[in-house]
Figure (cartoon, each protein chain N blue to C red):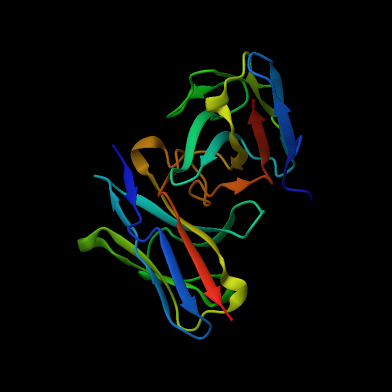
Length: 115
Length: 116
């Protein structure tokens, strides 16, 4: 069965610090990978996605993620965080075996950026 | 273009009461989903509808029913609410199985449900 692990449940950073959130998945076939963000009190919004091609993908608000197939990882990075990046971040995967329909989510990482 | 809309935003129920959560999308998507979000557990799929006229169970379907009313609307019903169903419920939609979007899902604003 597909699964997604986000090992950091809570991360606290100061503004301008660099960010890296870990995401590892378990799946035995072709996958698509996603990062969603949920700002306080809001719904999930798509940050970025990887389907194929260049394993380094860039998303909105200066975020990027790198797909490392050999490590089954899709870590999220940002060189310099801002207070407005305070949110919960979810990694998700879908797979060709389920027609790319069922998204499996990690448990989320709550990021707090202090000014 | 409102995207995915959900009603109500908040609801408080007593144990045993029933209610229906409504979801609609205006993106002409074929597939729709219902999730629940609980602290520390991420999002878990309750039911989904791959296309109009079909519904399938997800990871946590017990205690829920769904109706795909038409292409736009997908409702979630709690027949006899229990405190364990206290959660935030999100509806989402995506394009068809075979499409360039590769199953990217778009989410509604959520319904915060409390069952006393």
